[in-house]
Image 1 (tube, rainbow, N blue to C red):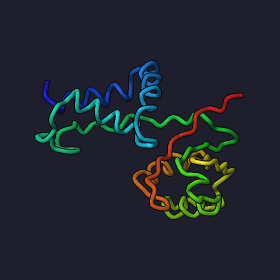
Image 2 (cartoon, rainbow, N blue to C red):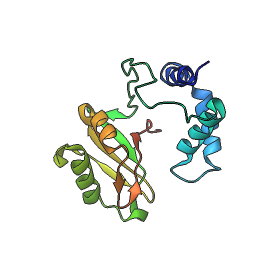
Image 3 (cartoon, one colour):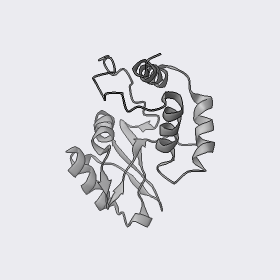
Image 4 (cartoon, one colour):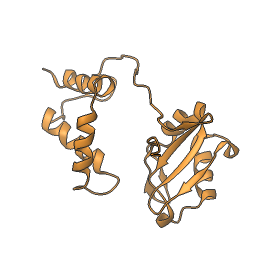
Length: 161
C-alpha cells in the first residue's frame, strides 16, 4: 500500500472509528514522555513505525485526496451556550486572567467580553467562550506561543460531578 493511502487510512480511522481503548493506552504511554508534547511525540513515533521514511511523500494536499474535512470537533463541556476549553498554561507560567484574555483576543479576534469564566491552575487553565466561537478559538490558537510557550488548546472534558 502506498504511503499516501496509509496516511489517508490513518486520518479516516481517526475521524470514524471508536478509539476509546487506544486513548486509554495513550494516557498510560504519555506518562513516559515530556509534559505537553507527549501525545505528539507518541503519534509521530507511531507514524514512523507504520510508514517508515516519509522523505518521498509530498505534503499536504498533493498526496492526500482533497476530501472535505469531515472531522467535527466535539465539545463535551457546554453549559448555557458556552464551551469550556483547556489550555496548557497556568500560574507557574505567570499567567493571569487578563493575560489570557489578551492572548485570546490577539490570536482569534473574538471580543474579550465574550470570554467567560476563567479557571487558572498551576500548569493549565480553563476558559469559556460562546459555543459558536469555540472552534474558531481552537483553530486560531493552534501553533501559537504565549510567553514563549507553545500552547495547546483543546475542548475540555466533561466535568465530573
